[in-house]
Length: 174
Image (cartoon, rainbow, N blue to C red; front, side, top):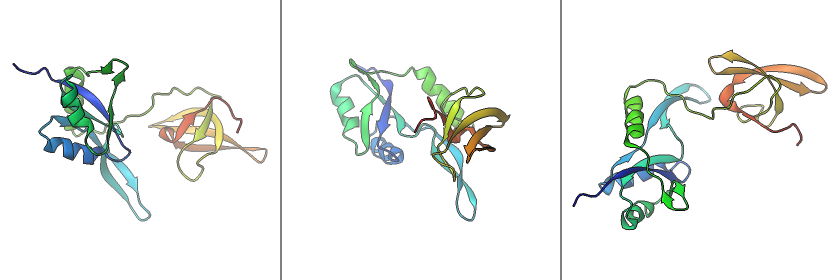
């Protein structure tokens, strides 16, 4: 009798995606780690590196049998299969097929939090020389760039930055 295989999302330890991928592949289990290229800034140059499309996650094909899932979870760096109280939730084959087509197309893929910022929304800078500063979203500039208004010493300064480097916050209090 042929076992019914489903795709599941596997949470990994931070920066363990490739290690988990290699070990699970060695166990003859179908595994998929979607990757994309990203600019990596070094002191003297900018490189294009390949990074996981969904940091901390990869996809494995398994049955609902506990022994099969335990074999996956015993992998160093594997944390848990995503699901609910009743167990891991399968991901439709069509979604994995779409991801595979997108990653094999050698196109620039963009992921991220889909937050829609509106003028006046309070934000905090997550990356760069102004990490931790709080400000107010002013406007979208285009191509992933935004303008943030920051209050410095009673004066306002407008700062242009990548939208992915800010996070919407509930208020300005520390």
